[in-house]
Image (cartoon, rainbow, N blue to C red; front, side):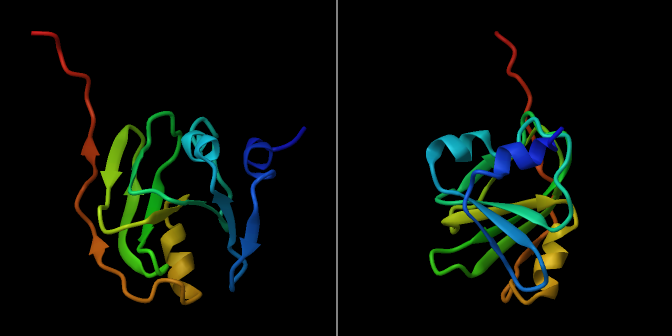
Length: 133
């Protein structure tokens, strides 16, 4: 039986970066909407590039993510580390985002992908349902 991430990401265009990180490209709205939600895990060395994208949520996620936000030229403008499920993150300076398993942003930095990183270590905002008043 195939691994769930293979079924979800296998049909997407992908490229291997220096250092062996495989970057899957979610270019269609349908692929961006599905993202990584519902997957039990994503192996180390795999990532999903959502383009265009300025905001993500982690509803339906079962594991924490590192988010590497990129500007229109592909330069890193911010990194959000270990964003837990049920959170929302936005970066208005970004034009796309790379989603990796928690700790994966360090893998990209090791291969020289993250050239100018503004390390945002603030905790992610937790979204809660509003009560009817």
